Length: 137
Image (cartoon, rainbow, N blue to C red; front, top):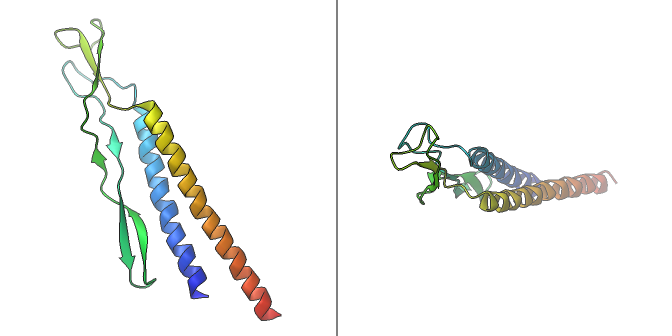
């Protein structure tokens, strides 16, 4: 029975990690069009979630946790908009280094991984229920 509960706990950590990943991706997408607040200022910088495999002694297994959230240090997008309040002396405005296509693909991958963890939980619960039915037998 402990193997079933261990698989549930491990899958739950995967759900938590992917949920945090989806929140970060959603934040990136929400800020994709946010210009710098002042002339010459920096706009929103894309955030990148990382994961860590952490050994859990109680489960005698590795589980996943959200790690450090780092920043994408790629260049910002620059657009010529001389009338914009955040335009520099040359008329260019800096926009975030967020690529909506990349964020959409990352979100889809996170959703699939989340669903895979849900399937592990559903399957484990079904197997646990079947085992209990056999034992009641």
